[in-house]
Length: 154
Image (cartoon, helix red, strand yellow):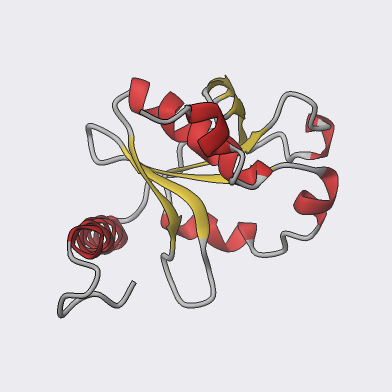
């Protein structure tokens, strides 16, 4: 058995926030996929699917500079029902748009501080994103199980 704290030392700050965010969302029956690509040129830190098919996007920011460097986040809005920022407890939250959701998180969990308004996806977009989420998840699990197999493209 390994010491989990030492295992976490290899993660970047944003990855630790994503980990805690995924743990938080799982406690609300939302299941996550990190680094989800909804369309070419976009990569969400966390995409979560809820028990009623809701799709939530979460962008994890570890610092002011990390936030300032993110110019693509508005492009994610057309691929989710709700959009959140997840940040650490020392992040200057006044920088974040008030219409967005807010999650405070660390490596071990988090809290939803502000729930954003829902902007329901159109049926065709929801179906396409849900199918992409399922296929990406299945591909990742298959590659984990058999990294050198015919789909071992990482």
